[in-house]
Length: 135
Image (cartoon, rainbow, N blue to C red; front, side):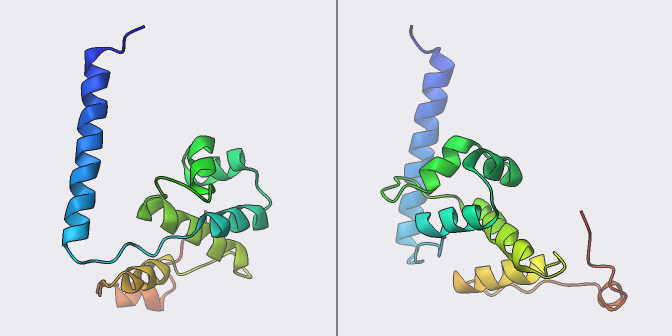
């Protein structure tokens, strides 16, 4: 059965956009993001005691995506956003009380990518401990 023309065009547009952004990224001289390796992702998932389906549900993706990210010869790695979610899950699991400084983790990750980002934090809320949220 033939694919509807809209799906074919959307897929073609997506692939063209992906090639375009990869080319811009390469031309910018910026190194590739420091993403978790397939083995690291698998180790983190297993250390949480989760199978691919539950791990996918935890971070908001599909079981198929987790499977692709864990393949040693993967074509496409996880996005930086999913990489951060995986790192946040790992950090929370390793924290004694389950609390982490998510902003610090993200800023440290950005710094490893070569970005120096300054974030304004309400000092009064920080002093009162209001910047921590429990889920």
